[in-house]
Image (cartoon, rainbow, N blue to C red; front, side, top):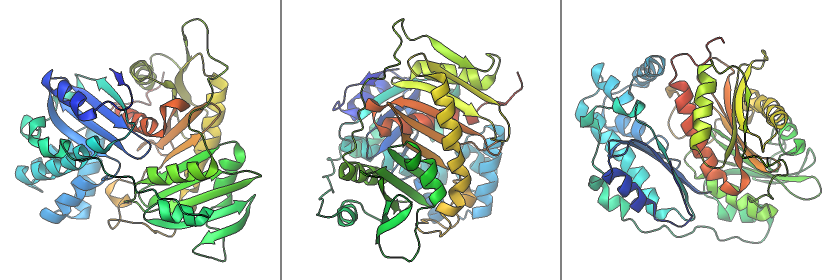
Length: 421
């Protein structure tokens, strides 16, 4: 595990890890994009980035005779049996090993192109050995195969603000579906105009009118971003599924004068940050949370919540963050997931047909709270369960999203994370 200073060349650090034949997950994240690279004994087994979330699936659909129903069946089986997706597609006879390797290479190429473009990116390596020995070597790659991608020049900034709230957001963010300004619960400006408010009032009440300074709700149908302004006003926008939502977050934050770096939390412990625990140490989920907390810099707490109809909750946190504060925030913000159908009911922003049907149906949420970023994501099972993390505000949203993604995968890889204690 390491955390590099901002501005350090990510591709150089990744090359060093590959040279040392490390196994684990390399994360580089900024406010605009996050990149995850999974290494197996120094070889690249998988890589993803937030700009090209469905590159692997799209490539298979375009180059192999793979139906949506077939892909969905394989995806569900891989989740149930903890099987690698590419190898399972080949084992079922749905695609060839060459087609899977080509799709993997395309996905990895897209992700690695982002590394040289990251500005002020934060880096973490989560070393793992056990899980990373199950990839078939013929479906992994030498990092040297992607030398052109890693040498890509940085992409120039696309932000060029123009006067006016709505116009500024429209000019700064690509693929904006709509923009809305509210005073309390009433609409004061919209683009394009509509006779109704687009932001569901229950979502507004559970986030920006409930103490959060900024909120980002992500789904397969797009992303909703909102920020608090002065005097009870809020600014919202919806961006398409293929859009870089980090640009929307940055633009809204700039308009609102929102500072991602919060003051040091007053609850910091003087005795070396002991931990608090919720639940029994015999819980597989709690053991996974404890291990992850120990590996991730700037992570203050992580929790798993059973369906809201039950009181069951497991979690671990540093003493500097109050246990009751975490539980209270999670209980309140988790209710937003139940409102997603209203948020994304119009279906605007869909990139592929029925992305939700292919398994990309789970929601994730980020809010700026007092001193911390709070991140949450729905889990595949049981229905209604979710995972939550609290990250120091100075770390930035990009790193928080990366931690949430990594922890969600680890929990869903457990044979029975919800085993009774």
